[in-house]
Image 1 (cartoon, rainbow, N blue to C red):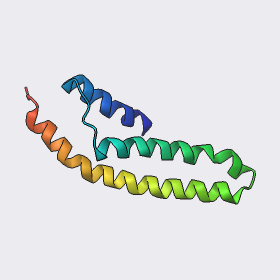
Image 2 (image 1 turned 45 degrees about the horizontal axis):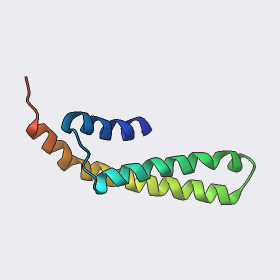
Image 3 (image 1 turned 135 degrees about the vertical axis):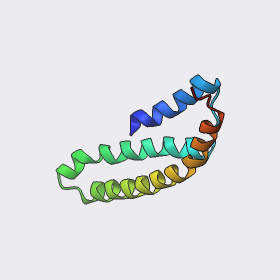
Image 4 (image 1 turned 30 degrees about the horizontal axis):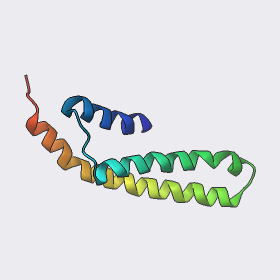
Length: 88
């Protein structure tokens, strides 16, 4: 997932020469932060920390919700890219 979160903006910059800051871009960046938060709690969870478990679950629930919104908000972006693409 992190690879695609980096590949998307890099691809946009390579094609258009600029980024388009907006909710979709910021949500993707936030999603990567949530994944990092969830992963960082694993060692504490292995030691039995209920606080780490709660943070882990919360970060993943928020991440899944944000990912779902990313899919929905990305469809118009995809359609716009397809519309402007020169197909062989």
